[in-house]
Image (tube, rainbow, N blue to C red; front, top):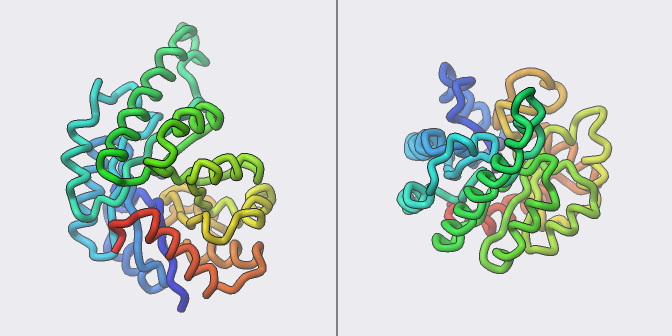
Length: 268
Ligand SMILES: [Zn+2]
């Protein structure tokens, strides 16, 4: 059975509080041999590290999600510098920019947007700095903020690479990411009936420049759409990606696992 990795999961979320060992066992049975649990703030990052200590095939990324930016400390670098020393911390993130629901959309908050964006940019920059120091790469979240996210990553190109996770942009934007030396990764959206735009991007992606992920508990692929997602469902995603590209599962397995091993050097 061809092996795959789930390079973006939120195993520390309460959705798995009652059955995490079974969730991880189902992933193993489905051929998903490695899972990266992604932190979204310091507490979540510490929980991800604990899970990596508890389960052999689980690794952690530590960071602060842009949607939680307003709760972030002034300087998150000291805490992250401690966490990255752990042998199973394989990346910084998730970090990036998210302009999807800005505070100014709510009554009485006009004018807050600039401040909110500035705080997101500040903690994103801090995380890129820690990644540079630690020799790690970054798991990047962007929503409605593609140009700004790319512009902020640009000065770090050559030092830090990003994976633009849950990639849903067109092939032209993907090329701009790849031109910076960064990567993209694809979720269960590839299996959705209305996911043709993502399948078009997948078709255009060089075989060695993308990875697979679930972003679980979100975005369960068909036929589980709408239910809780879990790492085992990378299997369904891999089947659709292989079909869209006209390649074998074996070739997709070899390429995506090699890419992940190079992007996350501590993933062993
Ligand atoms: Zn995520």
